[in-house]
Image 1: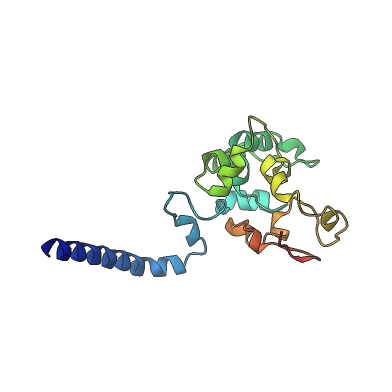
Image 2: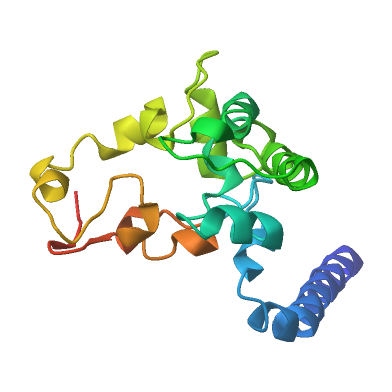
Length: 193
């Protein structure tokens, strides 16, 4: 009987501790748009897809011309290729001063797919096999995830500028979420495979 009471007391105490921790953190989580990025499931991996962009310099410099892609969508070597090729950045000169370039490169490398604890980033990283590409749309993982979408949804769609503009279809891309349930293709509607 004493064993049962002791186990029951320990169980109740553990539950109360968990409840208190959750209550104490409730306001912090509700005030933070990126609270999900700090939550872990039982396997120890983060529950969101990729790290949301949170570097203001990267957001300003790169996000002023196109979507500021999450660093978790490419591995380190690919980000190096992008950053060391800014003089001819997909047909444009996007060169930056040395200090800004170094700061952005460090941010990208620290959060790159091969350094990430985020699930989708790890999936991106695992598909490379020493391949270095400078476009997310050329990654094996991206190609596999988008191969079932009919090409005419993009090629004949005046509401889409490019396949590479993730946020046009992925409604929460800026929060690091690329969940299939959140996809709405402009001019087509909700995508459900």
